[in-house]
Structure formats: C-alpha cells, structure tokens
Image 1: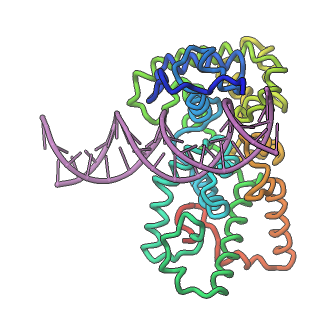
Image 2 (image 1 turned 45 degrees about the vertical axis):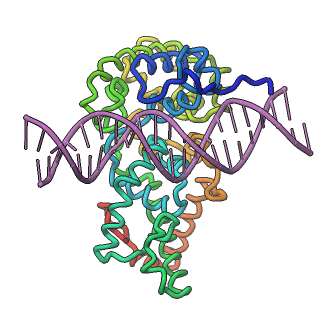
Image 3 (image 1 turned 90 degrees about the vertical axis):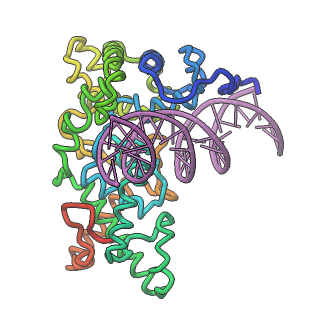
Length: 342
DNA sequence: AAAGCTGCCAACCGCGTGGGG
DNA sequence: ACCCCACGCGGTTGGCAGCTT
C-alpha cells in the first residue's frame, strides 16, 4: 500500500549483466550503501528489477567475495555443515563468510554431491549421508534398525563437531595461505576481474577495471556512517564492509589515509589483512556471526555460532578429560578432506 | 573440423516471511 | 487485523566453455 512496486515486469532486462550495468550498480552502492533495493533500479537507471540488483551485488559484486577453487578445508566445512543443516545454503554460507550461498550451493550440486555419491557407490558406506539431500540412499536406510540409525546419527554429529572444531581452531589456520592467497581468492585483481577463474571472459575483464576504480573512489569516500549503520541494520549482506568499519579495521581509517595503495585499502577495508580464514581467529565468533548476511543467529532453530563452538569445545574438552577421544577415533577426519567418512 | 555431450555457474523463479501502511 | 510489498532463500534453468567422438 502506497509502496511503489518492486518491478513492473515490463521493460525489465534479464540475463547476464554487462560491465556498464555493474558499474552503475557499484557506483550507486558506493554512494548509498547496499539496501533499499527497490530504489536501486530507478535511481541507477538500470532496467533491472530490484531483486536482480540485490542478487548481482550479493553474489558477485560485493567486496570480500572469494571466488575460485574451494579448499579442502572449505569442502570439509560444507560437507559437514550440509550434513548438519541440510540444504540451508545461507546458513552454511554464514560459516564461510567469503563464499556466497549461491556459490556453495553450486559447488555442492556440481562437485560434492557427485563426489559423495561416487564414494557411496564405491562402497564407502552411507555414513554421514543422512540429510534430506541424500534421500536416494535408501538402500542403506531401508534395512537399518533404529538403534543403528541413532548410532549413525550420533557419529555424524561427532564428525560434524570434529570438522567444525578443525575449522574454528585458531591454532590450525586451515588452508590459511591458500584461503586468502591473493592469487587464489580475494585480491584486488580478483575485484578487477570478478570472474577470476573464467579468464575467457575477457570482454568483461577490461571493463571491470572501471569497477575497481569506482571502488577505489568508494574507499576514499566511504558512505556516511549513519548510512552505513542504517544499511548494516537493513542489510547485513555487506557484512565485510560494514562490520570491519565497526571493528578493528575501519573504513574511516582507510579513508583517512586517503592515498593508501588500493590493495592495502581493500585488505584493511574488508578486514582481510593477512590472516583471515573462513572463520578467522581474528574474528570473534560473535563478529563472524554478525558478519553473516541475514545470516542465522541460530542453526536450524538456530544455534549461534558461539554456542556451536562452545558445544564443540565443551564436548572435546569433556571427551579429553574422560579420555574418550576415541569417541572420534572411528570417524577421524584426514587432512585431505574429501573422502573421509563416507 | 564439426557435431554432440557434459560440466559449470550466473541468473532467474517461486515461495515464505516480516514489516509497513 | 488485514493487505500488500520488499526482501531473502532454496531450487531450477539457460547458456557458455571445454571435452569427446
């Protein structure tokens, strides 16, 4: 009532985004910050619906997105989180702040699921495959007793805990170097060419230079704090940017420095200085939680990450205290992640 | 060399939810 | 209390690129 319609279906452009459109969108978000998506098409002149703009930003243009190959560590996390949460990609993505839910979903559908199916077929058993996504593994489920099923479930939970513990462990920076190796994931060059791994996309690449220039301007003239806060409240999609502004690495600092190198700017701006992992040790669980999109405070119900961690570590500590590390002994997670327990 | 196949991923679609009027 | 809309999420699809025949 009284609200303008999101998009009036006519004259709405679909399909791949052009560099020019990206630039329009990015430059608009430079000024106003993300959020208020319904205003974006009109204010930018883009013939796209607000939804499409939001999607483009969150899945592609948003700073801090890591593209390219998933590390073993990320793979592990996805597998376990998927087992734990099911196909709730946004929830899973909240634990891999550099990855979008779309990315994770795609990776699951194109790589991991097949991998798991293959492993299953190879006689790896069905442990760990109990979520709704593995409904086709009925051969195993049809005959198992309830007791077996419960044991299996418990094992799976243990495995998930183990993986999460690995992932969250500060002293084991998981795939740290590769995770944040500028050549691998986040870097200014990546921003220059968001389709980092699609080097074939040369027409786009040339134009994205402009986008990086725009972003550079953004860093020198970040959105006003009030706007940032508003947007933070409205849309935590921009978590990297805004949460860092509230945290140790501030946008304001970056902006004040004015002439810092672009790459440095990005690093500080998005809090990726040198040692962030998927859930960086430098990032408190609360902070990382806060970073999540509309990202779940809770898991399936939902549990806050800090709670999860507590749960994990308490369990681990208790097990250790009781000398029950063998609890995990039959579900040990090898360092090279894929195959493991399925 | 060309046609067909397969894999991958960006983007779209439809639905649920929450909030403003 | 109700309606309408924006937003967010998960599922699905279209199209491109690389590979195989």
